Structure formats: C-alpha cells, structure tokens
Image 1 (cartoon, one colour):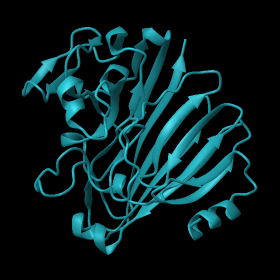
Image 2: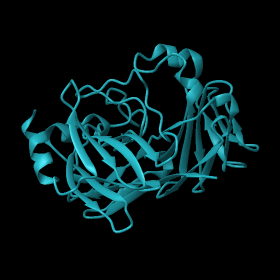
Image 3: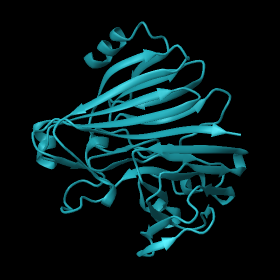
Length: 301
C-alpha cells in the first residue's frame, strides 16, 4: 500500500461515503457511495470512470479493455482534455487532447453536503514538465458532485503574468443499451463540421441517428442534449455551461477494432457527447482570470 493511499485513508476516514484503493498498476481509485448515487474516480487524470444513481443502470461507459497505466489515458468515463482539444493547433508532435488526462492529480477536498451529495475537488498545477508542453503557470481544478445528477466543473485559472489561451473538453462517454435504438435530441439546425467526410458547415436536420462512424463538431450551441436510450427505456440529459461547442462521437466498426483499449463491439453500447472549448470557442485568460467548463448529467423519465 502506497504512502499516498495511506494518507488519503487517514485524511478522509471521517467520510464513510469514500473508499480508497489502488489498481494492480498502482493508480489510486476513489469509490463514492451515498444515498443518492455511486461513482468511481481515478486520481490519474481526475478521471470519473463510473456514475450510477441509486436504482438506475450505469450512465457512463467504460471500456472493458481500458488501460489503467501511468501516463496513458483511460478509455471511457469522462477524460479531461486540457489545455487543448484534439491535435495541438500548431504542433502535431504534442499529445492529443493535451496532457491533463495523463497526469496524477491531487484530491484537494471532499465534503458530504446536507443534500446527501458528495463533493470532491481535484487539482493539477504546473510543473517543469508541463511547462515544456504548455509554457504557463496554472491551477486546474475539477469539482465533481455525485448526487442523483453528476456535476463536473472544470476551472482553469491563469497563474502566469501573461495571457494564456485555453481550450479543452469534458469528453464524456455514455452507456446505451443498443446504438441502433438510440437517438440524440438537441442539435437540430445546428451547424457542424464532419470530421469523417471532411465537410464543414453542414446543418443538422432533426435528431442524430448513428449507423456509421460519427465524429462531428457542432458549433455555436449551448443547449442541452438528450440521449434517447430506448433499449434501456431511459433518457440521459447532458447539459453544459461555458462551452459553445458540442462534439458527438462513435468510432464504429473499423476504428473500434483498431484501438487496443476499445473492445471490438463496444461501439454498439456507447456514444460520446462532449462539452468542448476549441477553435473560436477557446478562451484567452488574463493573469489571475478563470474559466469554468461545466457539464451536468442525469437520467430523466
């Protein structure tokens, strides 16, 4: 048992809603169980791996082939993409989706709220290694609130003495019973760029149905998406703040098979609805300024 794990168990022994453990590879996991819901979070990436309201099915999808390995992203759940989304805008040698999802964060605070919810705050700060990838001093916090709904608040603070431009995403993977019986409501008439067909400025007509690879960047949209998961007889609401870009992704057959950490038939049971800051939706923060990217996830009838 690592000293960090022992210290966390001692620091939060007053919160029976939390249980700390380590994976076989040594990554620290936090299990949250309260009267409203349960969730699991890995300190590596401050990665929310699961969320399940009481008496409900799991809401997030996690690959059975996910690799819990130091320095590698976890496939599924909610990866934190930061300080850029996708390829770096000017240097393709830098890591895809930034570096925050591949770093070990610290649990800064955990609290049991009077409502029954559990609130945890994770932080990541700059290091000499991070400044080689992104030359700024920063504090990045992820506040996770586990209740009947899952609230994720990603707070970027520019601790540098010069302006810093940040992008990123809450790259959420949602579990569905069958993608063939799934539709996504909330993006009708929104303009999008299609990364599969390499066509830009298309217009969404009606709900989104997925029967092939989908990788779309919907622009100038702040609205809620509703996943109609008909095979599971439920709807999943995905609302956001601090973002005017929504990405919808499903890798489909060939890309799923090409990814070692993605089971070959996994695309049947997931879809990503991502709250994104990218392109014109990135934010330039003055010294001391902050930006909040928020996603609120819950099951509705």
